[in-house]
Image 1 (cartoon, rainbow, N blue to C red):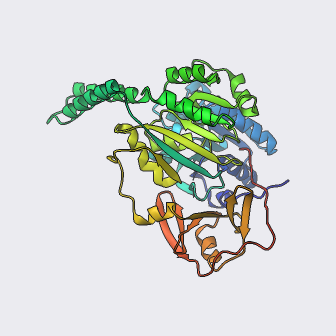
Image 2 (cartoon, one colour):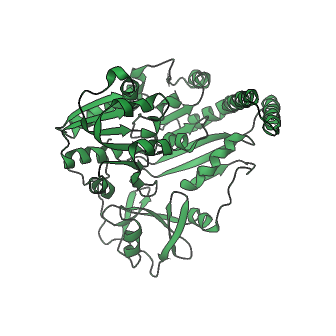
Image 3 (cartoon, helix red, strand yellow):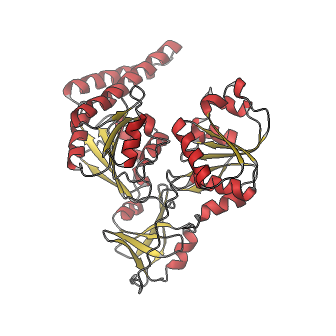
Length: 443
């Protein structure tokens, strides 16, 4: 069956001139969008730069699947940044996948040694440096606009042990004392960095993360589960306790990945290296046992579980009253739930309209502008309503919206919520059930 591209994928070939970035949520079809661009512009000689070997293989498979006739070369950053791998010919187009990872002091040399006429960056989390090399964002697709799986993030509060709390407070006191000095010498700055590193390591290794993760896995043993850790010893311990396989830099068993993708193994325990470039379509449950604090790492981690077709739940374990709570700043980007108590010291004030959004009824608009709601039996479609016109105007690619108890219609982009109108008549079920096939690019 030939599947219709999303609107933003079609817009890409119209908006792209000679450089630019697609800033799109994980699992939203960036790869397919780039392949459409290659075909529509009839590029003859294309270089695709990727950060990992699994991503290289995915690109090669998808180029064959989509019958791309252009001369395409797929190479990793690890080769392209070296002078001996500089290009002898000029490429018509260079695509830099996960371009936010291409701008380290080492990898950014790839822009120096590769010759190209046009450049396209792909990322769910582009930064200022990637914009410097790849151009401004020309297409932006948020979680709400993207055709991705429905998901909820559950933040779980964990306590440090008394001993861990003692050391955490000791590190924090020493960091604060050094930072409050009138003059901070180079030696002090290095000492501060070392103390922050030690404190973060202590939080990563918090003892209560292990039993909580095991408990969640046991309660959901019939589901496909991916566990992400920040420490190898933590992943190994979980593997021994649950008898599920582990994959990390010291245990790179590719057969384990294939068994997990094929469903032979229900659960996989990994270290952060699986955040990007790993594509399994039916993960029901993601457990982030220990987490990095950056927005980029957080979004990329979520990306492992929000790919169609399955709905997903994401558990994020956070040590209470530690720097872990900084991650809560991102919670207004999606549906979330909190289990346990947090101090709120890193919380930003939540506007009343955002609170209303999360206490209202969720609906969606598909790419053909049909209103529907996810139910346990599948999609339930509704007839056109007086609000449909406004929905089409604000969600030109489709997306999610909510209706409050007072019939306000709300949409959200990133963490901003706005009212687009009021429902004058209740939504009526469609006379015929329209059940469009779920779009699954497998890209």
